[in-house]
Every structure is written in structure tokens, then in C-alpha cells.
Image (cartoon, rainbow, N blue to C red; front, side, top):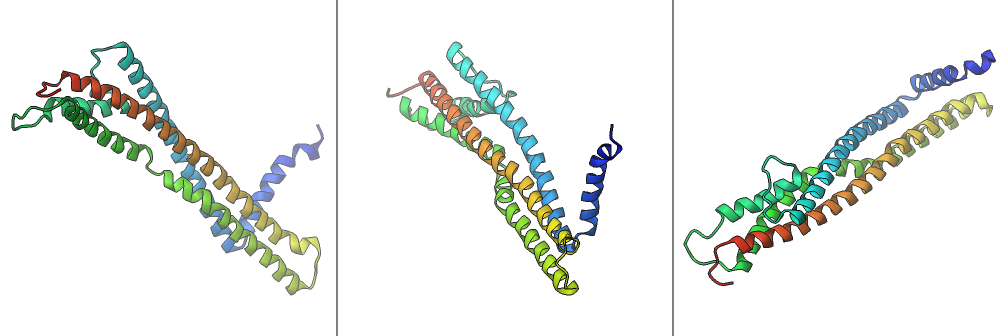
Length: 230
């Protein structure tokens, strides 16, 4: 193996490290901020991926059981979608009018489904928590990187004016800082935007599936309610 070739990855790594250490303080701040944003975004992505997998499994199991088990009752200790229909069960058991007045089937269904929709809203708030941060990073990170780019180019022009020399050795450090800030800004922004769009779409699909289950289960419970007028 060629010794020069074998040292290229190490040299490139050292060059990047040296570039970061010798960068202008303003560029350093921009780069550090972008790195922190990126790390936090990946933590959010990992958490939301886990929550999404659990939510998908939960609603899929709920849909199957609503179809195959006509006597289905939710388990209060089960996952998200089950917690939503459990709210309907509690409303059916405990939320009937206390004045003894008869309740129509449509009123009972509306009351039960309203309780389940309120529970679903709470579940969606939890699922969508911290997603706005992904959107913010996705929109702001490229501009933070652009700021570092502009600052690096300004440093290059300043170095040229100071030395009266347009050689690559004078221009390169500032240009390298500029490109580094741009690259890190894109590295932070692209996954954040993609993840935000993916999670927003998937949680909307989850909501629609649970809404369908709410209608099915609400109608089933309403039929079991003691009625005055049908």
C-alpha cells in the first residue's frame, strides 16, 4: 500500500480539526450552534421514531380487534390508541346524565365520541411535541450557515486587503471557513426538514385511523346504552 495514500484520511481529519480550531470566533460560534442543533434534532428524531412505531402497532391492533371481536373492550394499560377508546368506555360507564332523564342513541354516541376525540387531542399533542423545533432548525440552519459563509468570505477579502496578495494561501482559509459553515448548516437542516415532514404526515395518518376507530367504537357503545328514545 502506498504510504501517502494510507495517510490521507488521517490528514483530512487533522485538516478539518485544524480548520475548526483556527476559525474566526464568529464562525466557530455558528458552527458550534449548528452542531448542537443537529445533535438535538437527531435525539428528537430517535424519540419520535420510537413513538411512531408504537402508535402504528397500537392502532393496527385496535383496528383488527374492532373488526374481529364484537365484544371488544380496551385494556386501560395498553398503548396510545387503546387509551383513546378507553376514554370512550369510561364516558359510557360514568358519563350518563345524572338527572335520570332518558338519553337518545345519537346523544349517547355524540357524548362518547366527544370524550374519545378529547383523549385523541391529548395523544396528538404528546406525539407532536418538539416537532416545531425540527421545522425551526430546518428553516433557520441554512441561514446560520449562510451567515458563517458571508463572514468567512469577508475575512478572505480583509486578508487580501491587508496583505495586498491574492494568492491561494491568503484566500483559502476564509473560503474554507465559509464552505464549512455552509456544509454544517445543510447537514443540520436537511434531516430536520425531512423528519418533520415525515412525522407530520405519519401522525396525521395515525389521527385519521383513530378517528375511524372512534366512530366504530362510539356507535357500538351507543347501542349498549339504556335509551329513552332511539
